[in-house]
Picture 1 (cartoon, rainbow, N blue to C red):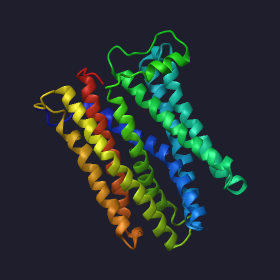
Picture 2: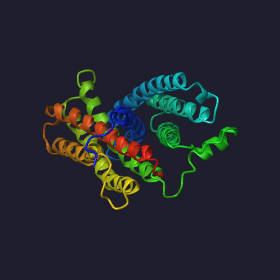
Picture 3: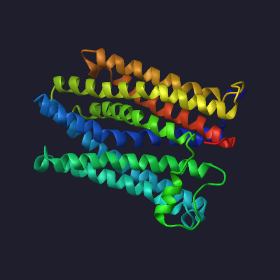
Length: 318
């Protein structure tokens, strides 16, 4: 039984998992903002409105960072393998940063239109478009990663852009891609809450909305982080069970134990920290716990990516 993961797999999986966590946060943040803005109307309170505005700024900035990072990764991949841009991977490679750019632009428009179109159907539509762009970027990115890792990728060598994208998502019904995408829905909510928690700590001095507001906003974001992560854990257990059975049907030889355990233990530890924030009357005093929980969630995503990469490396069907 292998205790520690392969160094090459881990070196790629950990940053890949962190980027996936940020991508899911960009996907979940617009929905957090829309939910907060709806609460501002139903509760007739200014606190949710302020939270939505701060979250919209975070969404736009994070999307811009991811566009730059994904562009740099794409350039590096093309330098290492120039034929990527000449073959079937050209459209999928360009689709991820393009969709992220569109999502970031919608988030920026949602933020800039606060004074002019706030409360209108157009404002809600723009916010929803930002979230949908993140969903599309997530689906494209995960499908592309699967196609790049699988031996004998399923992409046609010469086909239209639509045929290529259709082939990209035409995974078998029993593929691990589908439960991973299902799990990402909940992780998106958890990652959005976790990232927004850390973001609020940096805005305390610049946006002086008072201690009562930040006590409220930190509680809301912590509930998003806790609820999303707890909902994702059962799906994650199923994904890991499938990964283990693919590499060893009788479960006598599991994938590397370190990332396998980290995928389950680290989110639970993060949930404990978020629970402390929710129960605390002074959540601003839990800065270390808030930042630590975000790091734990990111590393957990890297652990799961390492386990799935291990499955692919053994040429198991996924």
